[in-house]
Image (cartoon, rainbow, N blue to C red; front, side, top):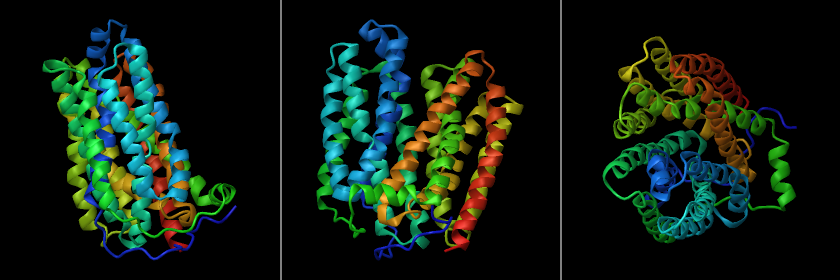
Length: 395
């Protein structure tokens, strides 16, 4: 197993930090589709005359397919090209999304949402790998901040849109809108050129390069914890607000502050990335997350839940982009495979965090849930800061 040190970048990256707009739009759409289903589950259950647990299984199947597809898409992007994989996946997602809108029953809807989640699972890791190929390491976190802004905006607007749909419009629009956006992004990506990347060896060579890298193991393990702490905790912000008496639409609107926080604080990351080290940015992000969870635990209420949503967006901008940039650098010769393992770990952690928090949330003990999240933020931040600093020092 190799030491905790960066491998030399095998190809020359472009000096600019601009992510092509169609790729940014694809990332936005993937996150929009993933976050839009939650607020309409009750409406879907009523419309299809099934219990809520049945409708929840639709979201669960989507999330499972989305997460488990990551390694496959990563391997394919190393062999076929980042943009070719994204275009193909967007076309499949568009067709499956439109078909979802016409699903006559829960069984058909569940199958189509699994297919949609599987397809959209290609977009984020392939986009991250594109940035890793196209942008040099010293400017990569700044470019990733733009991508994270799109992801945060997608998740935030999804919550708002779905809340409106659940209350006043047709729930099937939740599937139609991202499907049309995916088709548009796929067409736009035909005009974007593939960046240079390391030539892919055999499948065994690709996987072996990742499995021999100690840094890849470290980043993947941290991805699990990060997913549990950041995404797992975010899952319970809307239920906590509804526990305080807010409607689904109002809770969705407040939770959308996460997207606003991501959008605003990614601008700060771009401004600070050349002045502050990567591990310094991670420390700032961890402090934001800790402050949000601590406030929600100490003084539970609508205001502090709005604060934690906003500061989780800040943590995503500072802490998550640090881990993402690190993931793009650990195995450059098999970048897509390594990045997809990290992204898969992130969603595994998110599922673990949501599962572990389900008990306290079911009892209305959200202050306990957020207190545990605050406590877990400390070792996570310390590990990212120390690990990233050591990785950079050995470069």
